[in-house]
Length: 101
Image (cartoon, rainbow, N blue to C red; front, top):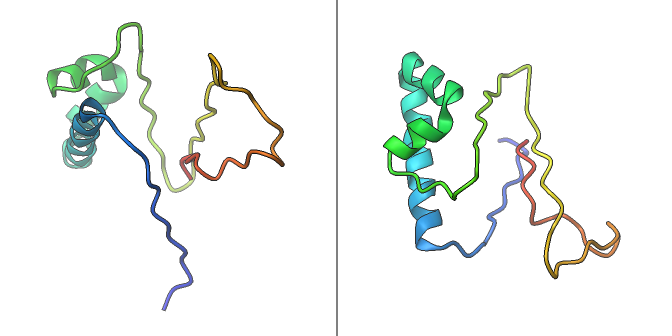
């Protein structure tokens, strides 16, 4: 028996976001099986993802990095913009943010 804790994150996604998630899932699976594809995905993610049907917003450039058992990447999210205020950590826990580890 393991002592792992799991949780499910409930978020609302648009149809395009759902389609992009499905494309990303297929890209990850293929990258695990095809080293040449994995390297292309790392080298030019926008081109590869677009070829697979991923809808990339104008002006967005993706960067793909690969985690290893010894090296993990943590993504620092950009600060909110518009009418969203940044509250102190005590008042606004980041429990809905997935840091990637």
